[in-house]
Image (tube, rainbow, N blue to C red; front, side, top):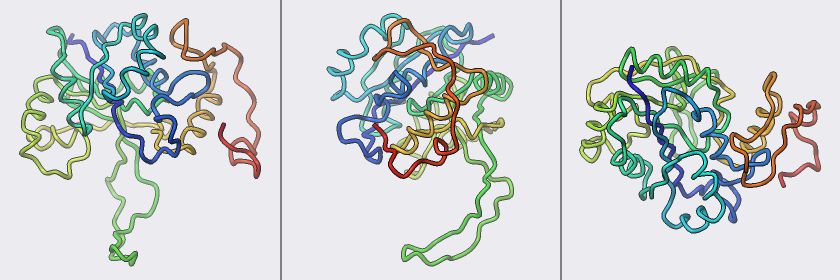
Length: 267
């Protein structure tokens, strides 16, 4: 049974995050950096043989200062990313070891992933060659002009909002990235690159809790998800976090915690 490499792109600019002093993947979330939460469910899996974290070259010095011990202990390979996400993944693919049969790509800013969802994606990738999680679109969709006027209502039938991890046969993904410069510039995820080669990608049920952090409100929501996950304890996946974290029991959440109080702000 083929084993997986996991790539976590973390070289983005975080321009929408709202904190000029910190990128979202390095922001504190329940006592440790967001990216450490994101990588945690992949650690110690027998079917994962390589983990690659791709960061911006400008972040290298600060990253080494803060996370050198984490990287060494967790046996994570850190590479320099590129100007765009696809460049970052392409550079990471160049570092794959020979024993990798499948490649999973997971957003470093998606910290609420569960092992169960990884199991589903990996199993489907082995069966179909390519797999990713997705959730049905619940909101009404409108196609809108540049001036804000509605052109039409778009049917939600069959639509899915897709997430990560997205997992693929190694040869399919490498072939897709070798052709990426010849494909449509509007391609926005790895599955779309693979689809452009004519390969079908299978969607497994995702989770609304598998939340991606884009702005500070998302960080707050991720904190609540981690605190309220049934039976879970917020704890580091390693013995020494970026900051101290505790194995304390899950705190009770009040209605005002879920919906926000008038004077509460993110720290």
